Image (cartoon, rainbow, N blue to C red; front, side, top):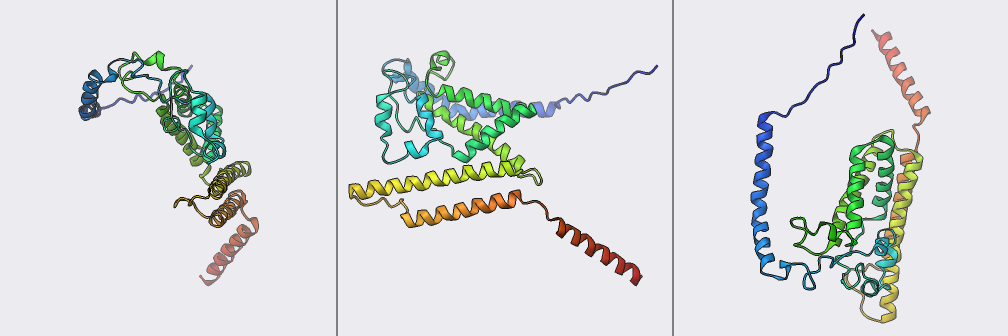
Length: 284
């Protein structure tokens, strides 16, 4: 009778690497001290000494209904929409104000579609990294509402700063990681399916269409109000030309991404190689 032996390789971190990592961590704390120490002093002598009416920690939150800006930029970023008035009418926390700068949360329609596909793929493959970034982004998204601030305001550093909406940066970073991972998998030769290419193409067209619509609405406001157009605003003709070029580029991208290899060309290439080898044999 024989017993199967399984060899397990145990990876240990060398002592030198541990010293380097600890030194890097200590150096990072020393560098951060240049900012942390003045911040601590400023907190003790300013209105940030304690949370209250003069220092509401939930100032600058994002209402949950305002998350729709991530999928409806054509509504909230239109010159016809008064975002400040909407935020004042329905603030995230009763009695606590916010503003459009703190409550910003937008990362593009195409990256958002790729991120959702990446989340589904992470669960199908059991990828812990994708699931981790999904959880981080979800927690940061709910933290932007300001409702979770009372749960963490006792932690060191959390009582210093206002603006929970700034954690939308973490949401944006998580979306970027998930979207980039999905795009990286699709860009591997032979892995792009027709369905995936069509999804990406349609998302890109939606982004282009919303941008073109925003330009059109801005011109409507400019012409109706009869004031000079801002220098950054492209003309309607230029916006139409750029939009048309983007549509053509998206169509070409879908075509080349979903095109199957030409068997005739492959057969011809093999025949040419065979004829060349035969000619070489005869010459020898």
